[in-house]
Length: 52
Image 1 (cartoon, helix red, strand yellow):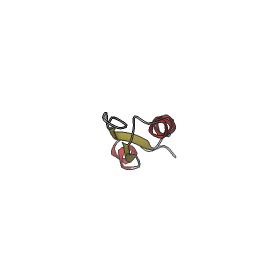
Image 2: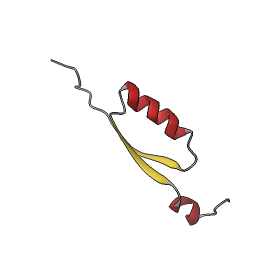
Image 3: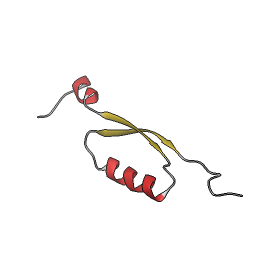
């Protein structure tokens, strides 16, 4: 079933990825980019992770 206009936007799942800079985050981003109903809304990554 194809949706038109605003109906198509309503069916989208808006996603926020926390930890987007890690291996797991990158993997989930790749999966989400290929998903027809997912829209990545926000990516969050900590640049200070692992620093001493």
